[in-house]
Each structure stands twice: as C-alpha cells, then as structure tokens.
Picture 1 (tube, helix red, strand yellow):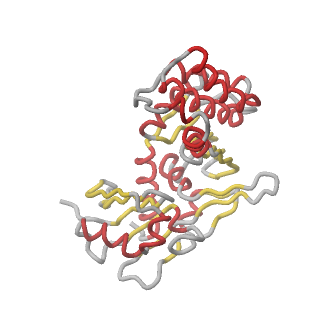
Picture 2 (tube, rainbow, N blue to C red):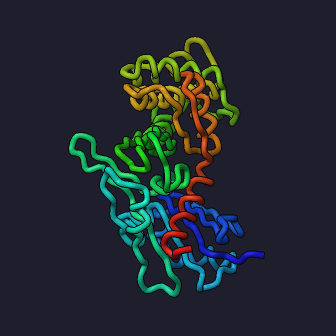
Picture 3 (spheres, rainbow, N blue to C red):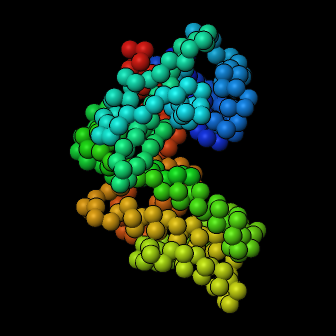
Length: 303
C-alpha cells in the first residue's frame, strides 16, 4: 500500500477541504469543514490545519500544498499575485513557504488582472484551471467556474489571458434572503424546477439590461398567478445566471465552454448552457483542484 506523498488543501473564505494523497494522485484520506479563512483567522491557521492532520494521522514529514484564501492578505501568509497574461506553470514557481512550522507548507499565489478598465483577481481558481487543463494545454479555452463569485477565464496555450468575475452566487443569496423576494422563496423544496429555470435563463440572456425588472416579476407573478416557492427560487437563479452568460458569451466565437463545477451548481449551469444550445465540456471542481494541487506538489518537491 502506497503511503502519503503530500497533503492538498483548498482553503476558501468559508470552507476548508483537505486531501491526503499518494504519489499517483490517489486520495488516501479526506477532511472537510466550514473553517475557511474567516474562521481560521480567529482560531489560528496552524491549529486548524494541524487538527485535521492529526485526525488523519498524517506524519510530520509529509508536506502540505495549499491554494485559496489562506494566501490572501487577510490569510495565513500572503502569497501575492501573478499578473496576466500568466502561464499556469508560473504559479508553481511562486509558491510561498510558511515559516515557523514543523513541516514543509507551501501556499500557491493567485492571478491578478491589473487593467484599470477591468481590474480583477482570482485565488484558488488558478489551481482548478491547472488541474482541468494541465501544464501542456494547447489551443484556446473559455472556462466557466461557477460559485459565490463566478469566474470566466480566457486561456490560450496554457496562458491566462484575461478573466472576469461575476458576483452571481452572492447576489442570489442576498436577493433570496434580504429582499422582498425572500417571501416568494420561503419553504422551497430542494428539487429544481427546470421549466422555471430554463425560462428565466432565456429571458435574461435575451434582455440582460432588464435583470432588475425580471427579478421583481418573480414577486408579481406569484401574487397574481400563484406558483411554487421552488419556481420562484429557480426564476431568481436563472435570471442571474442568464445575465451572467449574456455578458460572458457576448462576442465569443462558437465553441465548447469548459465548465468546472460540482453538485447543484454543475446541474444548474449545465441546464443553462443546454437551454442556450451552448456545447459544454464538464470537469468536476473537486477533481480539478485536487489534480492541480497534485501537479503543484510534483513540481515543488520534484516528483
């Protein structure tokens, strides 16, 4: 049985995911929690990480590679940014060492778009891109990474040329929780109302400038004509995603979009692309970040 070669950690703002991996990239152990950067900044990054390593019995000589918000200015150790255009292989050479620890811990940098007309940053998504596309990526790719802050990235020959962030997930949470539409979605079942979602995506994609009006129609439609809470929720979601796709696909040459997602987000975005007859190559988000971290570990520790 192969022993652990490294530990891979995806440390987000509100989530923590850790995998113990062997040299072949197979997962030997896994831990997940809500101890993201916000919680870890209070509890201490080192104690949080060590508690998960102890739970899995990981020896002190096993190194750790981390991507995500642990490398932010408010994180454990600031890992900085590479500027676009940035080749994904450049990320590997800029990993920052966490000092004062009993094991070798490295944090990967993010990527920044220092364009005054379109400033943007990513942290963690660069590792997903590395895992999904690989170091020897050829040709052009348009990549969609849904989330609280969805990323759309143009990659050419393994180089991140430009990207754009959309606060779609955060806006959905705010609209569904903190506006008058919270009454419309109260008690919604988990099942996706596909008809309501598809219709909302098509409407917003056709007229993204009317997004605020389309959202209010959710309330008016339910008051005047009835409808389920699930239909209201999916209409809000579809409206915001449709507007995101309208901006992101505008002016793009026809071709497949690489979708890096998992769970409910993968289901919704796949449905949205199907609604718009846009071909998609789907990659599981967990698999992408694990593979990206494994590639980084191999480069850092020369395996």
